[in-house]
Length: 507
Image (tube, helix red, strand yellow):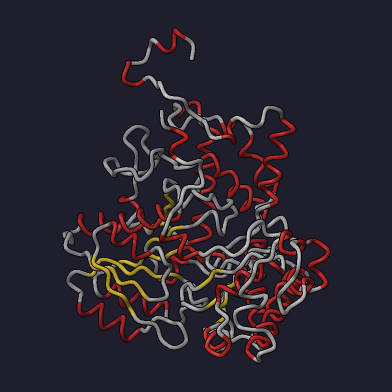
């Protein structure tokens, strides 16, 4: 640090200890070395540049290069969030244009771009409802009804806002139990604040009674918050505001193509009906255009992580109304194709009355586990040997896989994935029939690394080829897991730092 800079800092703010002592910060001294280090990390990641990632409820779809390029332009990337308005006219035009686009997609009267994640969007939507009730003499309306089929973050958000959570049952087909909803709404009509509902539900089905559900909540003084996690099954074919939702958050990292941040940056704008719009957040340092003065902010900047909004603007502009509707239709088609093809080998847990699913399907592995002892975790780990990232495991129903192929995947890729799960089913049957021992088979030993393949004598009852090349297509583009089975539960409950031991930093 230059001496003239150091003297500007108070003594108690000056750093005296050594920093960045981990070897990774001191090992790479040329661009070539750094490039190879990054490539090594990339090759350890089973990402979408190698195969589909079918995580249900996460919507891992294509983030096209054409959408991503504008965020590298200095006109967007280098703009300070508190820059004077006369220096941000172009940016504000983009923001207004995006709000208009999202209003057209969702049917809401206003769009707030401040929340910079889906979780923040949930919080902001419920906060607008709380503010609305308080402004209309309903400060006591703190009961929040949440169906069992809601997105998993909903209860946490309601709890953060100090609301009393009451769970609503679902029926055997995965829909909200409307009789139970009505009973609980009427029993709490004097203090009902909101319903948090995910549509289509996390069970992978459209709520056939969604209009009645919204009407029941409104008749008992509450507001309807719709979770936008599954908007990938809505865009272009229906509008959330039209079926009765009062507020909705939009995961731009899901439906609208912003990449998953892994901690940031993200965006979770909310759409609001006209009566809730005055209660959207503003900002004390840089007031939000159109927002009501005095409404506290939910993010540090007036438009959240605005630097990544050009991605969604590009996606909507390039796709247009027809393209986005087609994307939704392909997402539904792909999910139903996967569900139909797998149904002969695995039960599909929930379907609508026409036998169809929405944008995702839940594969029930519990009967197979009871008969064979092979768990959902074993199957998830084994998929790595087939070159696939596992679907969502044991959410929202324990002992299941939730699969969302999205519209981005071709039939050929879907067929590879289906072939993998069908082959795994045959492997499970070999364990069930006693051909392979329950404690030594490709599933419980998965995933298999290159080291396993070459390490001395092979003592397993299955061949090395069955372990690492279970189907012919795997040979063409083999993904080699870098480590064997990790005990997920132990790791979650016993956090261990992979950094050098603390003794290295002593003194």
